Length: 265
Length: 265
Image (cartoon, rainbow over all chains, first blue to last red; front, side, top):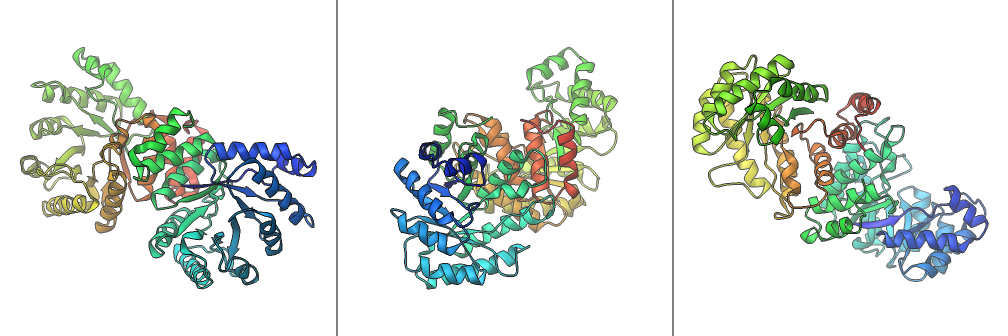
């Protein structure tokens, strides 16, 4: 499972404050904690700072890369911000994200073309969020083929089929799961990823819904997640799910997590 | 989700002792607790009492039916015991279980033929436990068609694809899940059921593995489970999974369980 640690996001109060105060030690500490707890990529997002987003995301990347060896996941809908971030990032970053929205696609296509960047590709078009698995697959097909034609290796593409809340869209859980299975079957070597917490929006005990859905998605082939790696009960569900799906040789990662007391409640 | 409460099993020490002491109040209390916590059927098993199994299972059924309105799930591999149990059970019971093992199949076929009994059909033949989803589907096909030809309604059949432990059979989780999906697709109106705790045999923190696997199986269509309904974290996973899969209108059961504090840790 490829884990993207989501905590360094300016919309979280502690991070917004750390950015404003240019408190590098705070950012470094959170980067290290996430990396030690299983994050392969460290998401960086400075989206709340309008007009300053490029400058601040560059600073976040410098902090993170001084603290850990993991690459960053550059989280912005703005192609100019992504380009500014890539200008200072050492090694191949993950770009979060491209979509089939024409303006965003056209601007980012040339940035990622022919590179070894990892690219998160959202199943979103100018027609809005897709409702069904089929609609997601149609967007994924266009996006993935477009990226491949632009010399992005299929192994570097992470499709996010996008979840909505089951409280308002009762079928969206199953449609998402079918989309994950369909994408993993259609494109050999591709990855799927999601930030799944939207699934539980508007319902109580969201952590229970999120970790249950994580297991379901892993069972359909999901192999990436944008999560809080310090959330032990969610990470425990990830380790358990991979063991249950035969994706953990001799249950080794599960047993190691158990011994390290990272198994959650 | 159709829940079979598994607690009244003589192999559990408290139950074995209650049977030996003919402590009807103890049995009734456990039947009531399971029913109040969501069990639609109350499993009764007196299998450890060799030579006395029929007499004791009849006593268990009388106790349970004096205590709750839910029918029993008659749990024995012995056709003679099942017949003895059915002789005293009021209303249509669930029979646990028939299989494709020739001796067991031939003896039980005539017992269930043309009745409105619910029948658990294990994906087991004289060749032993199947390893792959395909092998499970082949057995299920023979069993289900055999039962239908004997005038058992498809809606009364609960196929158990059988889980093994992922610690010794790393692929068995995925093969089980594929079998559930295949059975639910192949036979419209059928049910699938399992006692899933074998999946975690030999591994630590079994409760985590069991509840994670429960969610995965529900996402593939599982609609029955033989479980401890007093296990709040497992039942919470059931309610969460049904809401996530669009099988809980307006998330009503999930919200009710949450309000009743049956949501687990």
